[in-house]
Length: 161
Image 1 (cartoon, rainbow, N blue to C red):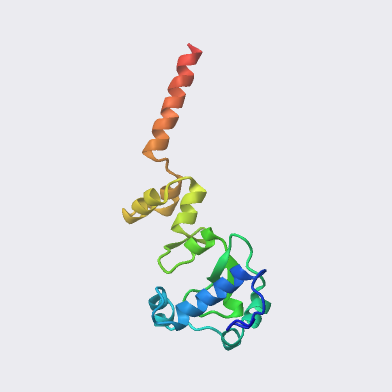
Image 2: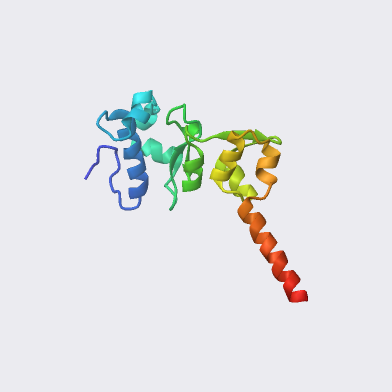
């Protein structure tokens, strides 16, 4: 049995084939729910992949469990050097809506900076929008953290008496 994407059997490659077909739908089918963000923005698929699922499979390999197809540069199309299998966290951090911040030679998303500093994304976002310097925004304890550490110090002080 042949499928339109060229695979003879999808038993071992269902997830990979699903990613391939979803990519095609987003870019080629005006009735697809994601078309406006892909085909509608002129996101293209390389000619080899358009012609053949096998070419896509050869370039990308099988989709690892827990990963999905992502583009490294979201302004560019689907072609071998711009695509990779990404984790959910990579997908979330690699969207047009992501707010990137360059600080101390690193370029990370706001949520990546927040995660690394132990501050919530919302708190960091609010601090920066209020004009805080990045070094202060990621290093100053939050009121919640301050209250927790104050309670811990008070408990320690009481037990010493």
